[in-house]
Length: 453
Ligand code: PHE
Image 1 (cartoon, helix red, strand yellow):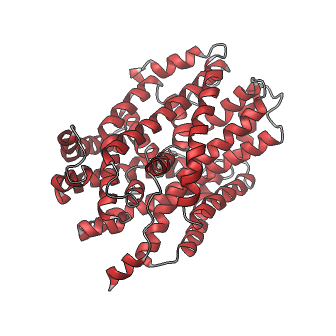
Image 2 (cartoon, protein in one colour; image 1 turned 120 degrees about the vertical axis):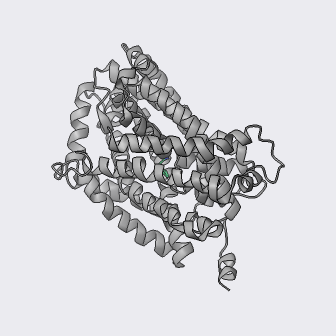
Image 3 (tube, helix red, strand yellow; image 1 turned 30 degrees about the vertical axis):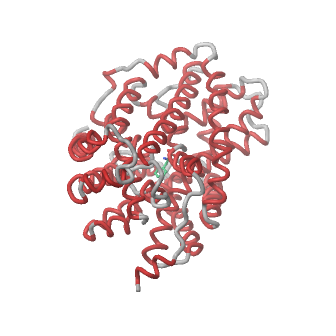
């Protein structure tokens, strides 16, 4: 009876191949690429970080992307149900993902709020005629004030909620097709402007030339966490998105395309922000504010800069929203599938809870800045560390063990190749990496980064 009920619930499917690709790429491409990647590279030795990021991308990124899509499509269920269907005792691994989604969205929405604020600034002409060096003060003033960022945090959450509320397919699939390419073109334009500023080449060099003395166990863990975060891996987002895929979709292709698009956007963002950092004499290790300080400075130096600024931050907002809805979707689909809540009720209540959970992250930058949680980090950084450097790698590690040792590679091979119909030359390499290389690599980096650095 129970399964009957579950089957009756309509299971949405993606409208088209390109629609799925852009929605999945939309989940992957977000603040992680545009906001986080440049400042992580800036903080961790530039080229050294980029190089390690690539290594992690190859070992862990492609592999796990394929693994999650495979499990999702095979079971046609969201993470908890998916694990349970394949092995009842493993359902709790899915719940770690749900919890991670909850935590990530709580601070993601705070940053998303900053983006909205910067759109408003652009519209009200607040960037025009401002000295490049003044942008740091403007940004710090804003994020450290108690109330205003919370209003924007609420706004961002309302937008996210609104989309998940009404279902994703018609809206996101449709808009992603226009917005993702628009973002790409716009970012490339701004990148060219940034790279042609006087002194910008120092930034390009910084990003391409590895400074190995900047690498520690912590750097490697940070790069690994960034791969998980940026590709939306290790917490079941791609299991969920894969569960809406039809059986004749080519998983092998998608698993390469999504990470490639994601990486391209991260590199473009890095080559936009870091050259500007050097051109204007900011500090590359400036941290989370980098995007919000250097880009307005670039725009203030461009003809029609205010208009560029508005369009740019609007596109960043859309990139952030296509990610935040996938975060909320993981939580909502869990509550809908497992607790039989109505979708609207689930989105609303969990949207509010996640908003509340995000408030300390915002206050921790200002009035609560004396509160340090994990290793001297403020609240927002601690949340992000917990999710990206602990929960996601753990989720990824368990997924590898699950596929390699519990569900079994033969089952995975069958699903990933559509029962042998899709050619996949590297199939056994993939299997070997999932079974041995990735779990060992993740475990070593994790232990090393958390306990010895
Ligand atoms: N990948 C998104 C970004 O880069 C963030 C995200 C993480 C989305 C986890 C979903 C799940 O912004």
